[in-house]
Image (cartoon, rainbow, N blue to C red):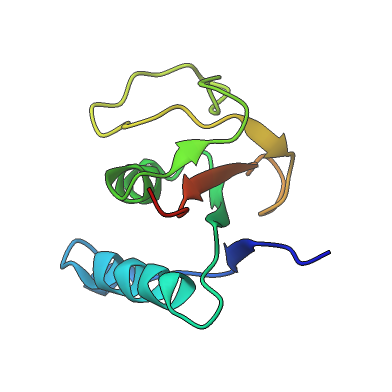
Length: 111
């Protein structure tokens, strides 16, 4: 059985270069590769720190959705105006103590 999903394993931009469109360009390039022949992926999957609202907003802007619904990911329950989507915690302490990961999915299947 062939797994039709593509995984984005790591995408990051050094703090001093953030908010300049570099992350968006990297994400767009990765998605273009996943869509490319001869065997385009049918979906894209990535993990994100549920407290990294900038990254979550970027992924949501490209159509990614939380795997498992819109359950709040952060423990504090604080409102953040940049929050585009609530990401469900799928792996506790994945990025270190108290830093949880959530899985986000993007449907790439042809319409």
